[in-house]
Length: 131
Image 1: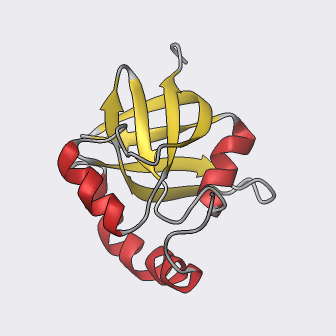
Image 2: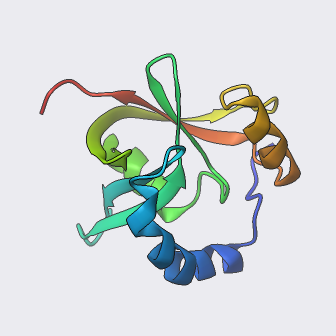
Image 3: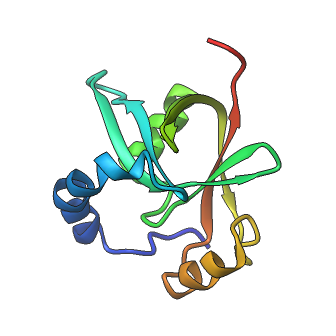
């Protein structure tokens, strides 16, 4: 079953307030990153702080607001994005939304936290070749 784990109103608050405060640090702190993507209609560049995890060469992003979040739709529509993490910027392609009810795509401690939030959807991104 696919659903939005957290209420949309909380997502709007986070987009305006929390993301503005965390964006500068998210690109530097391990376990976090900033997804750099373009609006599907506007073409405007957006920067969305997220949790990021590496697994078997892929980048895993828990979708705490579900696959219908605008940034996710932008990444899917563009076929990829750039992610700033640990002070570096990398290009990722082949985005796919994956249902993982057991949350085995993320480390054990994170599984429990995401379980409390009922997060079962993840964005999986593969690294692209050189620009």
